[in-house]
Length: 200
Ligand code: GRF
Image 1 (cartoon, rainbow, N blue to C red):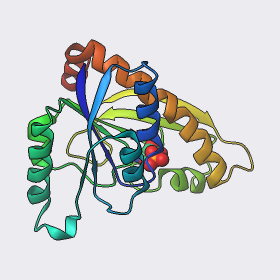
Image 2: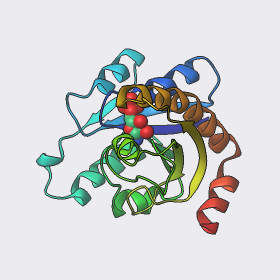
Image 3: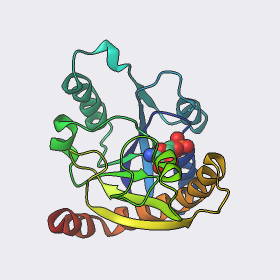
């Protein structure tokens, strides 16, 4: 069973979905640590309830990304983390973590990439008045939501779609799609992400 780290900055509903499927025996993984850059994030409470250790840091306490990522990398290595899952982590991953984990870091993004990368993808989709948006799970590289795509699922926008309604639809897709994709990646492992990482 692989040791994974989950990185989150906010509510952590995706983190919770992953905790729940592991507890239900439907995902063969062990969450060794939550990494969180927001000391007040609700995700931290979820970790505590589930008995998962947290590494909580404030980027302002560090002089550079390299500095805090070195601390994160030390934590991950001490916990034997083999795979990193970004779930609403609002920072770009830098060279320090990419050197250790590239090809083994995935992210979930609330749009059909390459459309609407970056912040507030849901607001961007609403402003663009698209009829279809969705969810993308992808490997993480240096860029902003640019890494090789693993899977996408579409969602249709209604005529009177609001931010809340679209967010609800997206979350309900994410909470199923992330665990099932992780199960595929973690059990069929190297071959799949090796291939993806090379061909894209
Ligand atoms: C999700 O919609 C995810 O796609 C994006 O950030 C959001 C995090 O939500 N990257 P939550 O904290 O998991 O509820």
